[in-house]
Amino acid sequence: MSTADDGAARGTDRSLGQLVAHATTEVSALVHDEIALAKAELRNDVKRAGVGGLAGGAAAIVLLFSLPMLSFALAYGIQAWSGWHLSVCFLLSFAANVLVAGLLGLIALVFFKKAKAGKGPQKTVASAKQTAAVLGNVKPHPRPAVEEHPAVESVTRSAV
Image (cartoon, rainbow, N blue to C red; front, side):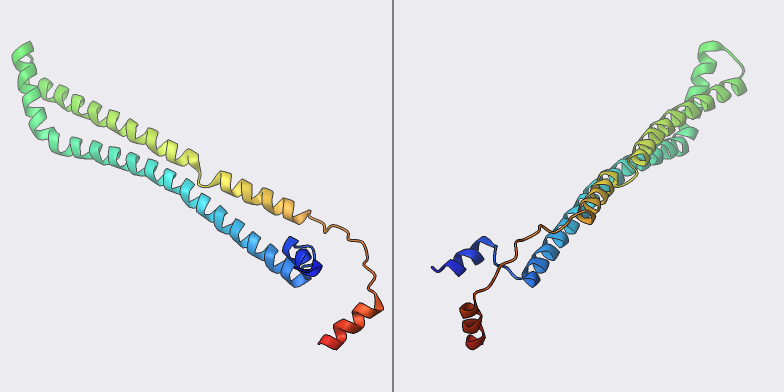
């Protein structure tokens, strides 16, 4: 293997076009990785919102379907236990159903707040901004001027 091949293998004799192509490839890979990270963070927020939605749906279903049966059973149970007027017992059973629905609604609210607190891919955006700031401040390394020997130049021209 010649010395020119050794230099190319180490990357010291790469042309400007090769360096730009390599930098473009690296930046493209970095952007793809940042996008993948943003998707992963959003996936967690969507899961939290889904749990909150399920809890809210459960609250609505409980309130809707359990009210008639539970209200009658509870009202007659209270009336048999206390001897109060039946209308007061129905009001108490309705209040108990509203209380259960309110607790389920609070659970849904907690999960929605957790999903909202995530505010999307904040870590990824911050990382991308930091990367852009670093790339914006990058300066090329100064290289010493290489004086070419006239014989090498004539060989290079004749080979073309």
